[in-house]
Every structure is written in structure tokens, then in C-alpha cells.
Image (tube, rainbow, N blue to C red; front, side, top):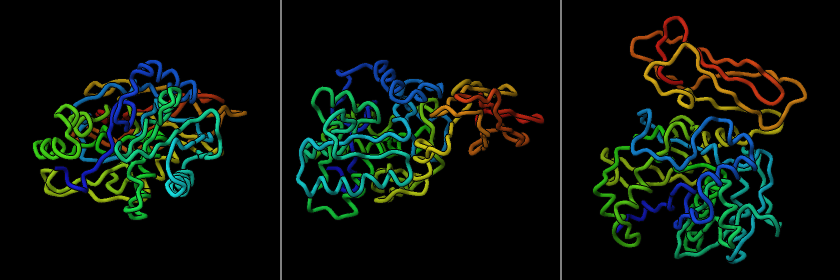
Length: 352
């Protein structure tokens, strides 16, 4: 039987649903829909987030908040939310805690709209808690099915428990994936113990389901991500017995500082914009050419070409080489620019 602290929402290529919505649309349709909602979803040169690898690339000991760039809503959007069921008490908890994301992300939730829904919530306790990932929510809704289930919001839970569930599942609804599926996660799982625990009551998962939900990670080409964030709301609490180090993960019930910063990046305020460029989007050879470039689009067009600030937050260099790397941009226009990362002075850069 799985320990109480090991509960987790289901995870698949569409988010955290226990039943795949692949019958509603294939990956290409989902990508096209995401781009129609937010054109910038197509501009990060990432592959469709249905391609999963067994091991993190590159190797890194990090648990991180990551958001699939193919599933982000457009910044500044008012998401229309409706309840398929639930008591007034359950619905009120959602209305209290979901908007905490809006304090950092330029996104709003409208719980009064009855048309053109973006998120449809059920409270079926038999189905646990889960959410479809980002813009994919339109598919189950179009078939009269919920895009989110909050089965763990019950009156025997503490206020902290309820806040954790709502924030976590709305994180998925905004496009964030589980921390343990981050491309830079390198978690030393005790696989046999996890197979044993999740194969018994109440999950009864076969090994392939455990593999999919626990051990598969996103490729670095698919998702931008923050630095190590053990405090992220998107990281579940896992028991000591599930890690070979004998150390479990903490029980996080509030947004971490990196959660806030990363969602502010994904959904920037109207007065500024942001873009993310990883060299692995363009090339995966061992040593990069002196310059690697990619075109990036702004969320909204500017009246005139804006002034850009640049920064580097992660470097992978060959051992013993000089740390001489520059981030810059060129061809800056009102709608897009070209991001560039250069290795200088003999620096042997693998990725940045």
C-alpha cells in the first residue's frame, strides 16, 4: 500500500488526467490549438511535448518547475472557469486559492462566466485530483467532460491541504508539469519500492503506469525550467523509502519564490515581455559552434522596437575551459528578434 505522503495526481502527455484525452485530438491538433490561442507557443523551437525520454538530458541534480511552452495561455487572458459539480463550500475554496497564481502571473480567473469555458472542474472523490495541461483543456470540455478534478477537497482535510491541491492543479492548468518530470531532474528513485507501493491499494498501478507517472521526464528541448526548487508547489511529497538517498521530499503547500518568478516569466505583465532560449533547441552536438541563434516572438507587438535586457542563468562548459559566454540579440523589431548565445575567447560551450 502506498504511504499517505506519496499521493500524486496522474500524469500523462496531456497533464494530470487519469484518462487520456487522446481520443479528442492528436498531438498535432493540440499543438495547432495551442498556437491559435497563444502564437508564441510555436516560437520557442521546441518539439511537441508528447516525446518523452527515460533519463534527464542533460544530467543535473535538480527538481524544478517546468512549463511546456506548447500549452501556455496567452498572457493577460481571463480564463473562464465553471464547476460541473461540488458543494458551495468546495467551490468557494477554489475561488479563494486559485487566484493566488494571479498575484504573479498575468492571468485572471472568471468564475461567473457560463460560455466559452476554459476550465471545467469536477469534485469526484473516486478520481483523485488532476488537471489537463494548459490549453489542452478545451478538448474534454468540448465533449462535456471536466478538464480538472479536485477529489481531495473534502472537509477532513486541513486548510493547508486544500490550498496545496488547488494551487498544484491550477499550476497544471497554467501549463506547469510535475517537478520530478523536469528535464533537469535526476532523482535517485528506489524503483522496486515504488513499484511495490503503487502496485497495491489504493492505486493498483501496473509497472508501465508507474513508469509513465513517476520515472519518465521531459526532454530539455520541450520545456524551459527554473533552477533547483525543492519548495515548489509542483513537487509532491514523497516518502524516504522512495529515494535511494533515504531522504524524502517536503510537503509544500504554498507557492515558492521560484514558482512566483517563473509564472511571472511565462505570463509577463503588460508593461514588459520575456523570452527563453536554450541552445539545445537548435543543436545537440557536444561542443557548440561559436554562435547559436533562434528567432523569438513577443507576446504583443510594440509600437517601436523595444530595448532588451539579456541574462544567462545556466551554463555547461567543457572542464578547464574559460567561462567567457555572451547573450545578445539582433534584428530587433516590433514583433520579434533573434536571440544569440556566443562562446568567446576559446570557451568550449556545450549548452546554455
